[in-house]
Amino acid sequence: MLRFTLLIISVFLLFPSFLFADVKEYTLKNGLKVLMVEDHKSPLAVFQIWYRVGSRDEVAGRTGMSHLLEHMMFKGTSKYGSKVLSKTVQRYGGVDNAFTTKDYTTYYQILPSDKIELSLDFESDRMQNLLLDEKETLSERSVVMEERRLRYEDDPQNSLYEEVLAAAFKVHPYHWPVIGWMSDLANIQRDDLYNHYRTYYSPDNAVIIVSGDINPEELIKKIKAFFEDIKPVSSRRSLVTSEPPQRGERRVYLKKEAELPYILVAYHTPSFPDDDSYALEVLAMVLSGGKSGRFYKSLVYEKKLALGVFAEYSGLHKDPYLFFLGATAAQGKDITEVEKALYAEVENIKKQPPSEFEIKKAKNQIEASFIMGQDSIFYQAEVLGWFEMLGDWRLKDKYLEGIRQVTPEDVQKVAKKYFTEENRTVGILIPLKEKE
Image (cartoon, one colour):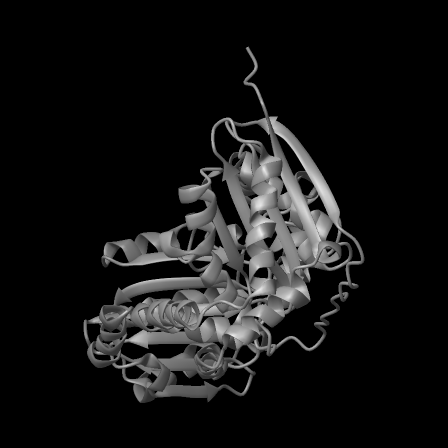
């Protein structure tokens, strides 16, 4: 314990915490927010632009639009042709990419700091001038459909994850996958995608975050020159249905070619910054914090029921989401016994709160990971983005403050409150033998 405590102290000494770094915030007249962090350790800069749109903003029959649009953002404008952005960034030794989630879509470039103006040029252009050629749209739609086949339909555990989410959420758009349902993807047309683009890709629905070897006072002048004349969108509406309380256990079974049985259990839980979110984060670490976590020691090491086991709290969502328990059964073991063993560990916490030692170790692990990661200029920007998407980048400070205050009794309380039979959705993967 002493060695671990000394490690944490050294983290604070060696890595001046980004939590207290000077974040420069600006808002352009069209509503575009800009956040900047200076970090001169290396001559690099990260440019990220976050749009407040994800699968949460889609409707039944049109799922997968946000992710497909992310792909199309690399297909060019009237000024820059397809993949010109990526090729230009690579020419200067940089990296560019994007990702879509349930709540937001993010594009980024990592470049030598004296080339960061490239990001301003390209991103301001594709915010307003995306071509969305019809043939390119249909071609990329096929690419995404193939991606869905490989990542989900041909992956037994990911397929079960989709089934569990679809059962856990009845009315909220978290019900559908970010990549979309296959039949919906097949029906997306160019005009559907263009309307989605025009609705959500505007300065008043975006945040620019730049971190690294920059001068904020000089850079904001350039950002204004590239972005401030882009018009905001006034007609956008956000209508998201609230998920009603779950009143009974739901179960789904998936029969698919696989080697071993697998179980995934989901409990409805609130998201950050709900007061219970901090204890839920610590609870996940107590259960699944590496080989010293309760799940590994019990199910893998002692009982030898599972090859792998985990607990995961997904708290950084706009709306209430889920706490997951999962395990892959060991060869020859009954998945029913694995399920019982998972619940037994949860019941142990309900009956007796974790020790002060367990809680302290879990909180130290969370804090060390959060702080050490911020030595990366990409992670610095990403942390600001996560919390800005939840409402305000300053919430990052509240996050660690809340974690530090969690007690064993808090962890026991949330286990009792949320880990109930009527609040859970259980998915079981039943392996089928490979066809001859």
